[in-house]
Amino acid sequence: MSLAFLHAHDCSEAHADAVWGVSWTKNDTVVSISADGSIKQWVSASGESYLPPDQPEYTTPSPHTLGLVSLSVSADGQRALYNSLEGLTCLWNLETGKLEGTFESYMAQGEELEPSPHWTVSLSPSGTTYASAGGAGILEIHSAAPESFGRRLSSVFSGRNKFGMCCSYSPDSKRIALSSEIGQVSLLDVESNTFTTTYSSHAMSVRSVAWSSDGNLLLSASEDKRLSLYDVRVSSAKGGGAVASFSGHSSWVLSVDISSDGRLGLSGSADKSIKVWDIAARAAVTTVQDTGEVWSVSWRPRAPSAGSAGAFVSGGEDGVVKWWRGAGTGG
Image (cartoon, rainbow, N blue to C red; front, top):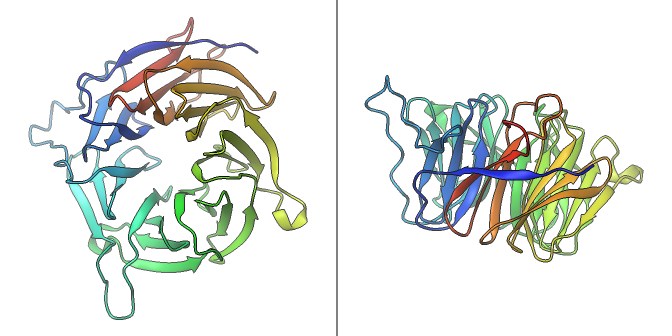
């Protein structure tokens, strides 16, 4: 299979620094976070800033003094959870423009709880809880309810005192994937609150992980220039591991995603390129050259129409959010 993707348009006003996270929402907007400390929402069809006409008081959160490093949008597209460089976690209502919760994870939360600054955060599909990880190899689950936002519900040590680079809830909420600076990807069983599986398929830090929509597959992106694919239905204790490895980038792979129909993988790299992968064929089918390091990529969440490869959005070093569509289609 050979595919081609064309540059559709850019955002109307670039961020002042690199875009470190993008997410295409179910409501067909895109949310982006930047090293300049800002978070923005865009209309996907035009790239214009999202401003609902019936809400004159709609506002975008003021830029943080430090960069925003982690972004997670709710399954219904109504809320965005984001985290700053030093560990301030915020929940923004994308429809009303209001902040529904903030949590200073770097501050002590009572005598029995030591501060645990967040680096990566992930909102659960139900939107009632969120997961976080940081420098101690600990995966935490917190309340996402406005009245108790940030309250720690559980804390599980991964077994290695290594930095947690990325955490992500599975679509069915049954698992949380946690990647580390030493190349491991571990799976937490949410019901038992225990780590059940650890994959060691990468030689360097794992920057990003993405779930398939059915929750059966997990794709990881690493500084070792490779992507690894896992079938989470087979535990590592039973001989499971990476079922495929994808090579082709010439530098760190910084971000990864899987299309809603599960056919295509997507990766952004420090080599200034974006690759689209045919998961079944285990091969790259498109390479798109960008102007700088590509820090984040996200597929359009709706399934592509028949014969269409769909569309995706990217963000990177130049601060510009960019939309791409399959050649010969409307996305």
